[in-house]
Each structure stands twice: as structure tokens, then as C-alpha cells.
Image (cartoon, rainbow, N blue to C red; front, top):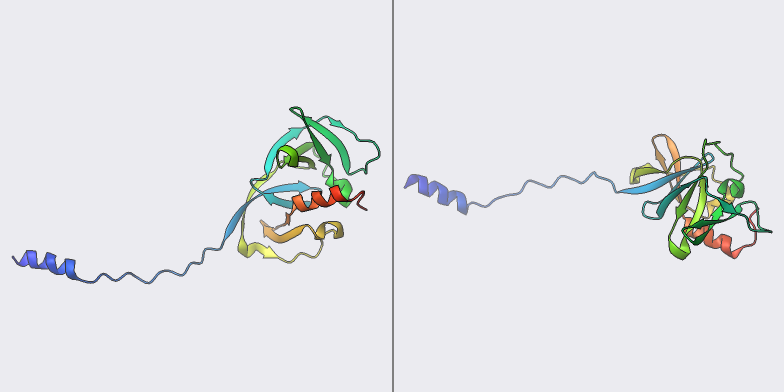
Length: 171
């Protein structure tokens, strides 16, 4: 009977939860890191990402050097842009020229990249204030992050390419 009383007493006791540990976990986000010249640009991880090697580009007459032309991707014509030319960036001289398709369907476009894209997990604490951002790019950069001692810029590529569509040329 005494054992039964102990069990009943145990069931009637009030259970106290230990205080919750303070959440020190910072918000993190997954990005696709693109190397274009000496710039590290971040685009949303889900923004497309088909990679083409040595794509055949059909030039368009009377267009700026940064507008390389059109790529035929399974019957869909996709504009190809070279951000090296647009921002006067030095090419890293990759052994191969890769073109990354961002977006899909009517919103798809291709950009020349110097290295294979990286999947990066960026912590909120890595936000920094960079000083050396090309002026033409500054309006299209969100946050800047330091990841593994490298500077990565959040690139709002949709806004940037919409502005290109609305202008005739970029200096």
C-alpha cells in the first residue's frame, strides 16, 4: 500500500519545466554563390540554376558588349548577359566558360560565371558593411556577408535585369 501511495503522490505532484534556454541560434539562409570576376554574388537558392558549358550564343546586332546575344535552350531563346563587361570586372580565366540560367520560362536569362556555383549557408551575424561595391551595382545589392573570410553580396538580379530591359545601355 505504501508503494501505491508513492505512485499516487508522484502523479499528483506539479511538474515544473526547467527555464527555457535562451535561443542563441541566429537566422541563417541558403544562397547560391556565383563568382563573377573578383565579385562574389549571392542569388536565392531557388532561383533556377541550370548550368551550360560552352553554350552557342547568337549575337544580336547593335547591342552593348554586355548583351552577348541569345542562347537556344531546348527551343526557348534566352538572353545572355556578361556582367564582366557590364561592371568592368577582370575575368578569372576559367578553363571553361559556364553560363548559368537564372529564372525560368519567360523570365529566364543566362549570365557568364567564372566558377561553378556554390551552395552557401549564410548566418545573420555575418552581415557587414562593404565599401568597395561598383557604383552601377550598388542599387541592386541587398546585404553583404562575410563567409569564410570572403565578401559575398546579395544580388537582386531580377531588379537589375529589369532595369537593363528598361535602359538602352549601361556605362
